[in-house]
Image (cartoon, rainbow, N blue to C red; front, side, top):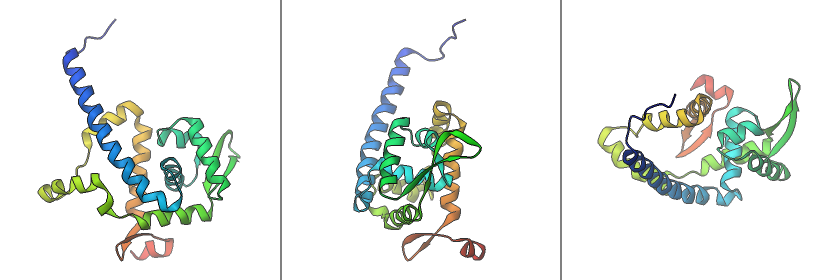
Length: 192
């Protein structure tokens, strides 16, 4: 039996168009700022995103990278291969899972990823700057609850769980020191 739609076609088109336009505008800004941020490290966005995911998952399958990086499996594999050629990742199979290919950061890859975080400058991010008036007005940044709900329904709870895990690892695994983000080692973590 066909389910009745609760909204009109016109409302659907208006919502979809509004979402598409706003998403595209935000992505254009985010993409430009992200590329500028990582350019000194000779990385592109896909490569940096793979390093980011691999760091936060403490190793990841190519499938996980594709899923959480919102990229095709071949894109995840090909860019991971380039990172391996640069000595930033290693490929392996897991004893418990011979079907999937996994990647892990090398020490050089971990160091490079952490260097990119240290080099981040909030003042160069347009979207961040655009959110500052909201923070000034309400005392906090937007929390995106509606957007998270939409993404959860589109990509599933695993996607949001990984996203929240990455945010928690950022919150718990780094400190600000001299205006830079620094990874907290296990010894520092117990004293912070």
